[in-house]
Length: 137
Image 1: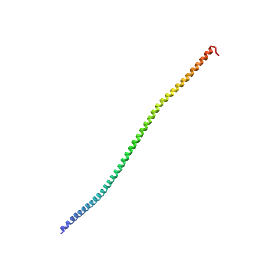
Image 2: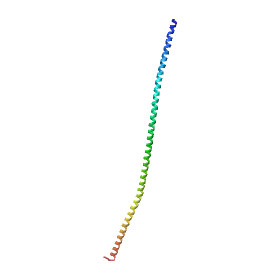
Image 3: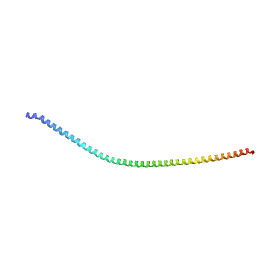
Image 4: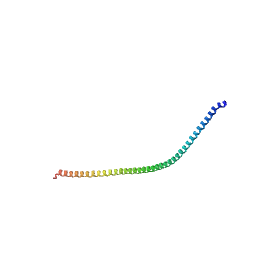
């Protein structure tokens, strides 16, 4: 009987080890189940966020498309305005040459009339000088 008593600590140690192992495995199983539930909840949240992301992505794409269209309209308007300004500048340049030509014609005309008046004055002075030389009054 004492022989069997010597085996008692070994058996108790094996039973304690088995109990500890089973307890440890049970706790790990509970942790795994809890983590599985949390992962499934996170997966659902992620799927819901994916749907929200798709909606937001669609909204951003629409806004981007509208912005591009507005930018194209603005650029077209600017190009049109620049073309108008260029045409106006070209017309002003052409008119400047025309005005310069008209001014030159007026200047030449004024010079002609002044020269004609000077020639007439010179002619009258010559006639008067001729009369004085011939003994006129």
